[in-house]
Length: 299
Image (cartoon, rainbow, N blue to C red; front, top):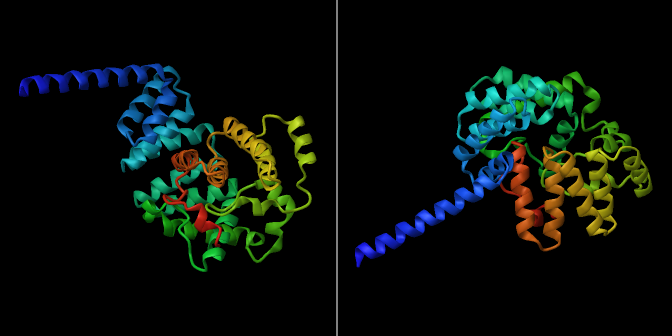
C-alpha cells in the first residue's frame, strides 16, 4: 500500500514538473523571467534573463531585471555590475541611477551612493519634490527607499540636501516647484498619495492632451496624464486604457503601475490592484513594501 501511494505521488510530481516546464518553455524569456521574479524565484529569473542576453547582449532590460534579482539575493556586487551596464546605454535613466546608488549604499560605498542619487535627482528633479511632499504629509522624515534597504536612507537624505544646495529654487518653500508647467512636465506624485492632486491646474485639459497625443502618440507620460484627468472626471474605462498604453510605451515607470493599481482598488478589483503594486515594486526600489490605498485617503 505504501509503495502504491509513493508511486502515485511520484507520478503526480513528475507530471506537475513536466507541465510547469512545458509552460515555461512556451513563455518568451523576458516574460518568463518577470513571472519568476513575481514569484520570488530569483534563481530561475536570473537564468531566464541570462538566457535572453545570450540572444541579445544589448538587451538592457534583461541586465536591469537580472540586477534586481541579484539585489534581492543580496548579491550587491553582481547587481551593481548589471545596473552599470544599463547605465552605459542609458546614462540618465533615473531608475537605473537609483538602483545603482542603492547597491553602492548596501556595499557601504556611501560617497558613491550619494553621487548616483544626486545624478538621479538631476535626471528627474521631481524625486526631490516627491521626497519633500512625503515629509510634509507625515510630519517627520520619510524613508525615500524601500524599508528593506535601510542602509541607503542616510545616503539618500544627504543626496537630497546636496541637490537642494545646488538648486535652492527646488526647496519646497518656493512656490515655483508647484507651478503648473513643472507639474505638466514631470507628472510624478508621491508614493501612496493620490496623484490626482497634481492635476488640478486648469491648464491640464483633455482637449490639450488629446492634441498633444495626436502629435506625439508614443509619449507614455502624455497618456499617463490624460489617464489621470480621465480618472478625475470619472471616465474609468478611458483612464484604464490610458494607463495601460503608458505602461506599454514605458514599462519601467512605477508611477504608471501605482496609478492603475489605485484605480483598480477603487473599482473593487483587489487582485489586479495587487498585481500592479508588485510590478511597481519590481521595477522601482523606492516603492514601499506595504501600500494601503485606504489609509492614504486619510493623509
